Length: 142
Image (cartoon, rainbow, N blue to C red; front, side, top):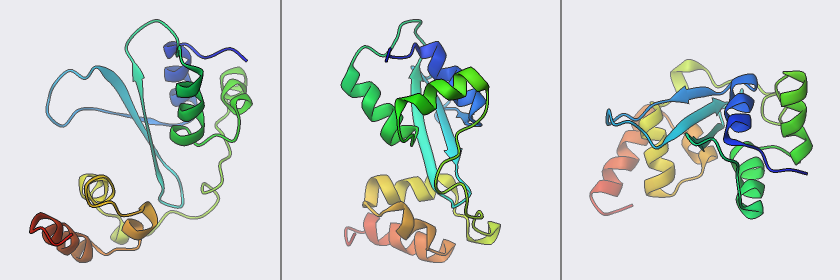
């Protein structure tokens, strides 16, 4: 199967209901950044080059469609481009967590990326628990 162009990736994100996010630092980003929040609360993230080329590395493309786009196989990607219909992913079947349990995105991301917690652990935290966990991390107690 061919590897997609960056234009294909951007179109996929649009058709599959991803939200384009922007740098909080106010800088012009080097990539388009996207996120998709599944109904079970899992957050998918990907970034796509501004370029006009295509994904050159087969290993990189493999990682993008499996890990970032959460697709079971490459054909799902091409099917979205062909049909315009979003992917039916596992995790999109369950209801979203109640808004009161949703943490600010930056806090949730810091707990995952900086502290090393899993998304499931973070999704199970209250706002107060999440803030306390970050305070412990900053104090060196992880």
